[in-house]
Length: 330
Image (tube, rainbow, N blue to C red):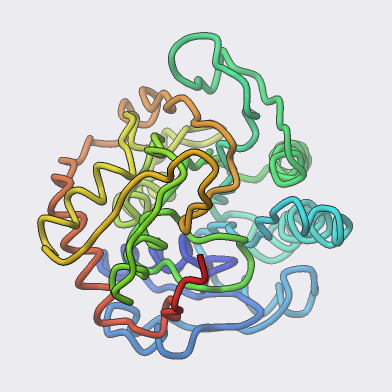
């Protein structure tokens, strides 16, 4: 199978590409730029790179040539300042880019499976009806420009897929951390785990704003789940939450890292103290319900936390340019 991944040189795009290549598929990555050092990684050997803008019809025509499936991840993830300064750009890329892609698929690859990677941000910052965010019982209520554009992208994709008879699957992805995360410039902050690991490798003490509980999904597991949705015949037309399905804490992750690196120091910020690990969310989110995903795809065995930390550490040490190490100013 030949798969086009838009936003293919970003964090999740590379995680998906690694998994697809390991499964023996042909992978084409579409992005405006690429991290040269990461692209030389043997795990990405054989991936074809197309540099260009997803909104450009000629670029899309070339990228969609002879593909069997498309995973759409191209997006800007803004913080509040970026929302204030560049709202039109966020809407143009996240929503307009999706409309351009759907038109391109209809013209050049009408038989391809299209996986739209959306976000937990469509659910907003409130509380779910039950204990977990559910695809059926919890309607979207986005509370950020990013969430609004992701919901809009879902609506555009659903409408245009129906008009053109396209095979569409939507994945609402929860927070992800792990290998392939790098400073791409399209997200305000890297995951807290990667921020903490970069500080640890620089010999800095980590100061967390709080324990940072969340439905944290390891990037290799995210790549596997998204690849599964590209393959699964029964997924067509569905919306699937993609997350760990359980709450874990960045503080526990730091504890596990401290056991691997005895010199590593971390703590929670005291009242009024500035943390040196950042997250845009002011409060923790409830976990995602992943029952629909697990009913469709065989449940993989979750790696123990210590193994994830060790794997992440090894990856960061072997990819020193992914996250430039800077001395903290706090």
